[in-house]
Amino acid sequence: MNRGNGGTTEGELVFRGGGERALFIVEAGDLARAKRLLAYFDGMACEVRPIAVGPVVVCAAWVEQPGSGTFESMAEHLRDGYSLSICEPGFSPSMYRVALQLARDTEGELRPLECCSVCGAPDPFPTTLSLRVGGEEARFLFCQSCSGAVMDAPDAVARLLLGKAAERSPEWRDVELGPPMKSGRAWRFPIRRAADALSPSHR
Image (tube, one colour):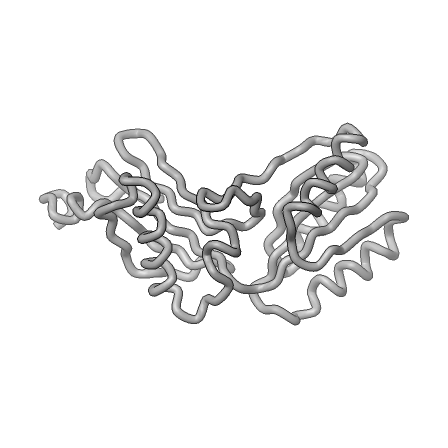
């Protein structure tokens, strides 16, 4: 986030919607192979969120375009290289809990997911509202279900989500959205309080 000309508040809305998700569970065997596996994931044409790293590696992945075939080719590659490899289409809290338990049983490093501020569901790629006020950051997260799956009109969806956040927490009221910018596979909207927009430092 960029601070605007001496302003005291700043933030952004990072919107991820639609696309296709998958959960990968791979028995790497040891930490060295786990690191090589993470490097492989990083090189693929998708966004990857590690959940557990160790003898068992668990990663969630997201591609913007459904039906791209990315996950199918990844699953085939992993089946050829590892004795146990699972590619579970989509993402669900129940599969997430299973994956976490596998990682705990093998004493891997856990990297738990943040949870939706509306329904409490864990999500590897949430839509995120963040606003910095006087050195403190407020955050509000939407899971895929609560943010909606369609990205045809990101401006309208962003305003709708900001309204939902304002209904639940007063700190998101009187907040303005700036023009959107595509950043990688997500849309980013700068945000600031309406009072800041009227102050001399923001004119």
